[in-house]
Amino acid sequence: MKTNEKLQNEIQDAIKWETSLDAFEISVVVNDGVVTLTGTVDSSSKIVEAENAAKKVSGVKVIIEKMEVDCRHVCKKDNEIADEVIKALKLNMTVLQKKIVIKVHRGWIYLNGTLDWNYQREFANKVVSDISGVKGIINNIKIKSELKDPIEKQTIENILDQNWTINYNTIHVDVLGCKVTLIGTVDYRYEKDEAERVAWNIPGICDVDNELTIKYFA
Image (tube, rainbow, N blue to C red):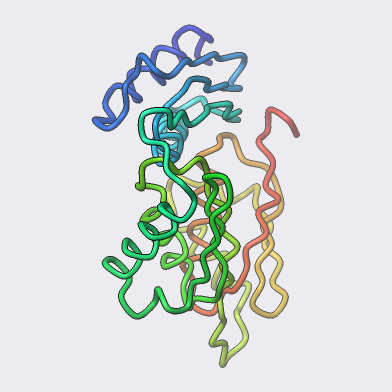
């Protein structure tokens, strides 16, 4: 098991490798696999990038994100942010942007609507998070299931079992209509996130309830 200091150094190195991040802006504290990120950055996308960098480090069990967005140098009114959001979605998502309803309140972006795939929802999130001055994003976009045949539990289990980054033996899958629930324990945060990502990529899935517990807290 890694010491707190070793894990802290590895996370700091991972953040340094992200070219869009300034490692001096982000503080990392580690306590038995629980990682706390603090600091101030100029966009919400950098918070996501810092989290993702930390997730990939072996030994990370939980991430507590306490970072803030400081828009003092790029402060914008809500209507200015809304205009940029609309332009960004039109440029990157063409027809799909018509299915997304946007609301901006005090620098926070709220996304609503219905899309066909989860990767489209995640891409919409990525597109708007790159806009400067955005303090945060609440993504309420729903996924529409074009389900013709029942989703087989065994299919999901087989796909999870084939993923070498996941210890599938400790994961239980429940299926109700187009909703999948993941129950059980995993060793690390990245396993929990990867299991959810795999489930979302299965055609017909409209919702994934990730109830997996990190063993540290089990």
